[in-house]
Length: 78
Image 1 (cartoon, rainbow, N blue to C red):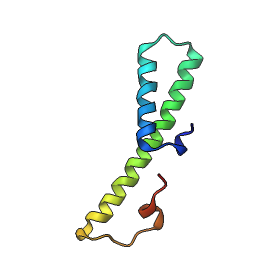
Image 2: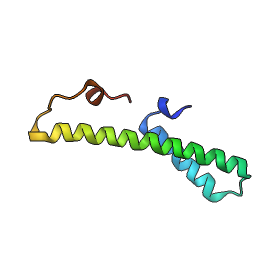
Image 3: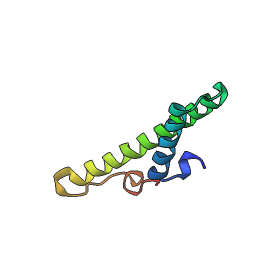
C-alpha cells in the first residue's frame, strides 16, 4: 500500500515497523536500502500530514474563528 493511500496512523505504524526491522535484524544491504527508502517516504508523508494539521489548527485558533482559507487546507486529503 502506497503512503499516499494510507491514513496518518497507518503510515506511522508502518514507519515504526520499518525502524524496528532496520534496528533489529542483520539484513542484506539491498533489503536494508529498500526499507530505508520506504521509511523516508513514510516519514515525508507523515510530516506532510502533521504540517497540514498544524495549518488547520492555526486557522481555527486565529481570533477564535475559522478564517477563509484555500479549500485544500480545510478539506485536506486524508
